[in-house]
Length: 224
Image 1 (cartoon, rainbow, N blue to C red):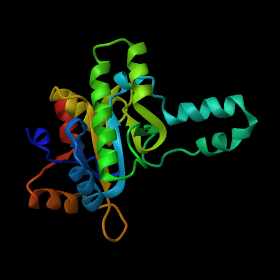
Image 2 (image 1 turned 90 degrees about the vertical axis):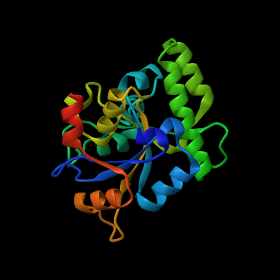
Image 3 (image 1 turned 60 degrees about the horizontal axis):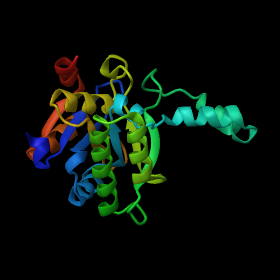
């Protein structure tokens, strides 16, 4: 299985949506070299893609929920309410963004070593949470990480690909289908021109380097 050997998977969502390819590594075994690879060959934001159910068990909120709580309870945060009213241009679903974290033992949190530690540790906590209570899970999560940090978490929709067809849902549903812990470390591919790599450019890059390139439609056919 390529992903368990430390190789990346390239995932293109679909034309007319984001029309972007993200590079993903299995978070459980991610290394500092993998972080360097994402920085060099991705160029976008490096983030954790996390499955919905265990994320909820860990008590991790969506960013929209944090904003809602903030402006509902204080007039100091009305700016958040104003900004929240803008919709996403590529989907009717809400944003998958959650909190930004650093592992408690990192220094600044931004180095390849620091971010790989954060990613691996989050996957380990995620795996632990599958077999223990919500209270225990949240204690471990809270005692293992600090926030804000340098690694954003994106949480899949509650109904997965049936509800939202983003990269977060595509990779976490694929990992579940493969009986892997559904946490990935990913990064969007950006070209030298500053625009997103086209599907063809991303596919050629993946194949030229001997890596797996998957289209969202193929993943949906397997997982739905």
